[in-house]
Length: 392
Image (cartoon, rainbow, N blue to C red; front, top):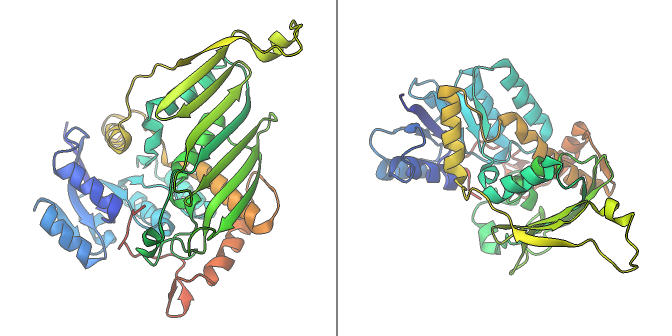
């Protein structure tokens, strides 16, 4: 079967990684062949000319590439605000599309993108949620949703191993600005974890967040977040993240009726109780007794193909109709959590889902209007520059 003819819009850090991996032999079995790249930055096109095979065409305009007939599928790896714009441009031309995370900056624009996808069922639309390929998170989801251990009681994710220096933030005028990036650690570093949080646990019904904006860096967006969530069945969750901890942690813990699950250090540790706690409680006669059990490291299939795995499954979906790792329509879920956390911090109030998308956009645009990223005296709301496309 012929390989899928691929284009990439945006060959900054992430886009260039895809281009190199697909053409220099690192990913020989994806079912994709790179035929063209597009970027409005001449320096990136010069990089492509020097680095990529001569068979890869180069375009200074993404729409010209999409209209060239050279590609039948496309990866969109541009700054966040423009993800929906170029995804929809692909769909309207019948071109299969893979969107980098996040799906967009605010859910209203992503909902428009998803509506466009519904009008084009012939297009295979995927999201680059590569952490869903990680065997430990897949196993955690399997155990949580199996019903074997009863219901979730509490979930906590402490993920503060994102340390970034001021030099990182100074590397591009779009970084960590409301106008250029649309947010900070939640929108840049954490989309995968927010996706996993809801993929494993389901969507909460209420969110309250406490944020510090520029707590550890000279930036205008959040670099420190603590969010409390509640679910319809009453259980709670806490999500803590920061780019300011020089020695951070990454621990995801789910306490259930019959087990404690902890992902830390690339392992899933399970402490399995002999009985569901509520059943054991009925017969216990020891004031300080606790449910007996045993701990072990969960066995997994060991597979963690990351970006390569997502793209391989996408190519197979295009050619054979097999399932994706993550459909594009699912991108709105983690972004909803991010937007709800921001809205709660902006207003100082808890936010009940479904999200008031209009109110969130209004609050975001107030900050965009005064953002330090300016062009000709006005904030850049939807920048099409790919200079740092896909850079994280």
